Image (cartoon, rainbow, N blue to C red; front, top):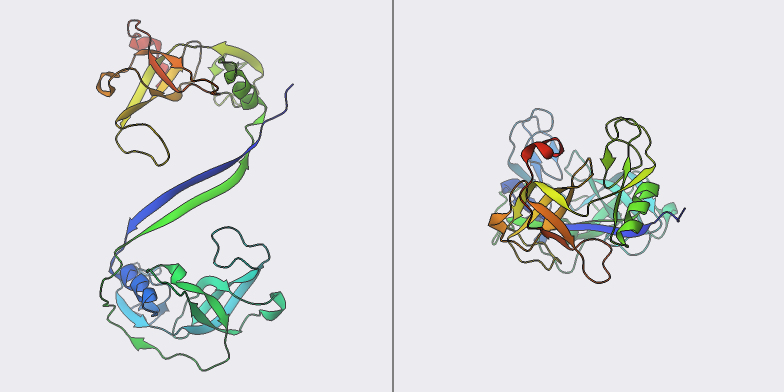
Amino acid sequence: MSAVLKAPLVVEFPFTRSLGPVQSAFLTGLRERVVLGVKTRDGRTLVPPVEYDPVTAEEISDLVHVGITGTVTTWAWNHDPRRGQPLDTPFAWVLVRLDGADTALLHALDAPGPDAVRTGMRVRVRWAEERTGAITDIACFEPYDGEASTVTVHAGEFEDPVTGIVAEARLDYTYSPGRAQTAHINALSGRRTVGERCPSCRKVYVPPRGVCPTCGVATSEQVEVGPRGTVTTFCIVNIKAKNLDIEVPYVYAHIALDGAGLALHGRIGGIPYDQVRMGLRVEPVWTEGARYPDHYRPTGEPDADYDTYKELL
């Protein structure tokens, strides 16, 4: 048996969102070195501010200018900072209740070591040199032994307010496909598609998972399927993905390979996007050195009868 595969995998995407008046005021305030909270009907001041009271669900919008100094309520030492974190040297994650606030704000505390951090210690905001209207406008917190900041009412009005943000989401991890998918991937390198048959229901699953999702029993019998198959369902993609060199619109489809009991997905090419249809017979197109088909194209065969693939939709 060949060794089980593993490889580093990165999932990332930009998350774009618009801001309501409360969040807009909060982020714009950070750009202007102002920390705003929001006051609830019963007098609590929430920082960071939210649009709705987490207790009563009432809409809230009365803004309060709280202090840039505060008290650490709890903390944890981060001895090995990761990419994108506030500091590139060891630091403490802290919850800080700013002066005038009733809730705590999570951020980094720049401290020489864990012995220098304690619950109840006083800290203040260290502002970033360049501020754009984001939580990173607070570079971090730092120890402070001066007077408490004053708290005032604030209208939340600024010139050129921030109305939207783009947050880069990223997840780095090591992925191992396991025994069944390792065999499937190794077969693809030889331009073969291999699934596994369930010993109970006799369905062949591609790609295999090592267990039948219907019966819950282990699978081990390998079965070669395809290479041709049938389009069961599809969608037309009109938004170009980052780092994907495919012109839009294009079609992504579920394809039931001949002999398989589960449809896999792939791109359809070699045909205008508006001519792709359910039942279309397709075959894989490989590029030199590829470990999987680049896309599927029509075979020229008559369309498959609906009854032959209706259980695979």
